[in-house]
Length: 126
Image (cartoon, rainbow, N blue to C red; front, side, top):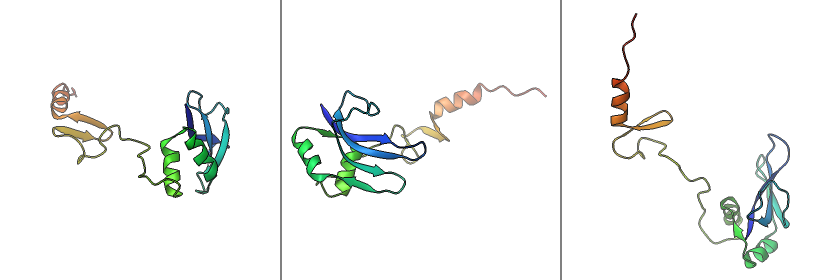
């Protein structure tokens, strides 16, 4: 299956991406892309896309990555809603945490786990 996705190019600490058409099975770093459809400079925010070639490849059955989909929505080439490219893996705040959990820094534990860990701590001998 064909994918339209980003391929990172450029130097270290200077992220620049190409928008390419490639086989889904091939890794994005392999360099074996079928066609370059544009670029994105992450530091300056500049984007350049070839809308006629993108529409051609979409007509051929190519699928979009989430980030490229969002680029096309911004450029008004797609009439769709943006996709969350980075879905949440765990609750990030107390308000989003399920009932009976305690959020401590980066860890989320249930109240019973917290009580058990407090009970297992022995007072230090001075």
